[in-house]
Image 1 (tube, rainbow over the protein chains, first blue to last red):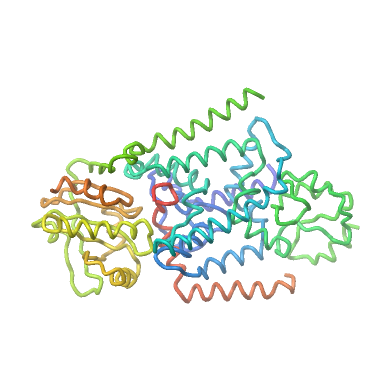
Image 2: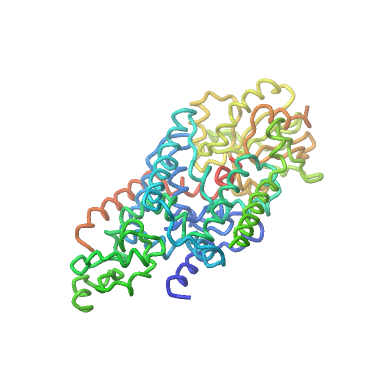
Length: 283
Length: 177
Length: 43
């Protein structure tokens, strides 16, 4: 297991450290739930000790009032500028789950047809389900809804629905058609995750959309030394997520491309080290 | 290759079926109102010290169910399903308010939010607040909304987690009518 | 820390400060500490 997987596992364990929750079906109510974790981790997961940034954003944005979620926005902006999609690659439990599923034997679609267009699908999902629908629901019915959580998020279904419905009889009794839909969406993703590397991250996740915006500026993560890059496309060829170039908005900083670059132009940003010095060192 | 496709399909169907399996009322919801889950045998409502939203009057739950069965709704102003249910509860209070006492307990950390909501919507449903931790523990309120039907002897006649529409609420109130 | 990002850090801190002033962490806590029925497909 490499360093990245160890850190992914550690973060998954830390985000879900409320072990008693998995035994009694009760979610954690401690004060740490006021803080968002950087990755996607449903706050209704019985083990979760923090809030999901995406869930928190949607439910504060629109409920019985429309509000700009300043605190959540400030949090995710800080996460974004500090680490960008390094969070996706190193600090997201749902990313870890996808990578584990991809390791299962089965047909692998190394190149996803239509990736060029599909990668923009997640921008549409983000805008529609995280911004437009919650606000529209409020404007139309006076009551908002966390539309991404409600209709799509497979992380919520897997991490919260499954354990809660199994352990809590009164919740299971209240389940209905939307539960069926969510399980269908989860089943679809689980199968896809065996065949495609991180399909949720690449084509759906709105949090990844946000973090991707800051990827090139973030303090942590993969970067390309422009002066040395010849745009040969080698990093794209080896990238499991088919990012067009290392360090762009698709890149989750898994690091697989670092060794492959013929010009040694790819490196992990180190906040303690000046990138200019890094260039001189590796020449 | 074919084996794996079949394997994946089986896995997908199993997860899908698990979702369907955990929804015993999925079929029922399509046509009929959802029946309330029967409460555990002989479960008595623990007494609760409540107070009105302005903090001026104290009330104990026992006083509420002393003479008439009580419909109690745990909700919060920031909870969309709770808020969606409120007009239905208000309508049923108009219909059955002489036979059942309707009351709501807000889980809002700031009772002023609940009061603002009630005033804004012009609701007549009495709303109380109290020690939220005690309420959550005593009544196993980990998700909201929760509806409780309490008999005059303090027995919990029915409990339901999740929002209900008017038809479902009517069905829920049956044990007390 | 790249100097061009300083304004982004400042913006983040300002947003956080506004949020703290408006007691938004408490709002996040309320939603995170109660099972989100909509999130688990019950709504």
